[in-house]
Image 1 (cartoon, protein in one colour):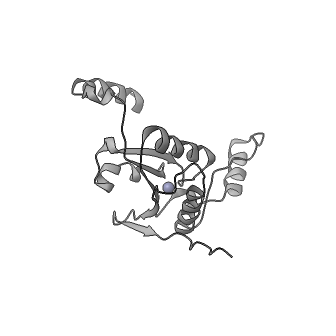
Image 2 (spheres, rainbow, N blue to C red; image 1 turned 45 degrees about the horizontal axis):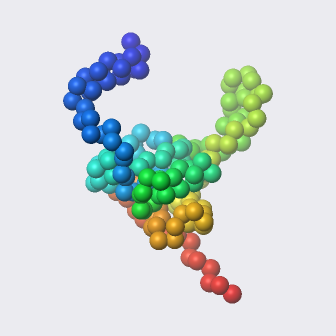
Length: 173
Ligand SMILES: [Zn+2]
């Protein structure tokens, strides 16, 4: 039996105890951008918040792409979240290759070099990645200035979060 088939079987049991009030419109308070890595999945545990309070946007890395910016705007302006947390982590798979290397490897291993090179948003330093994300989100005109945008690195060995300080704002000339 495939994993998905097992999951479907488990879902029938899950639905028996499902709280139907969850079907109402969600009212999340915090939006988290984090990596696809499964070690980042227990956000209610990591952050000590109810699942219903957390809007989650997940990408590899994570990468704050144009799509992610759009989702952050919807989260703030449509769903009503009031704070933005950018959650990076140690030991990220996206630091283990460069986009060029992975494109070359996939062309070679599949024997098909026809796809245009893919953008995987690989990176080297989670701290630098977090600073760039803060800058990118903070500078978007549709993210209100009174919405806190803070970046953290989750240590996969200890479970602790460490805050990354944003790049100091340049003083106006
Ligand atoms: Zn990752």
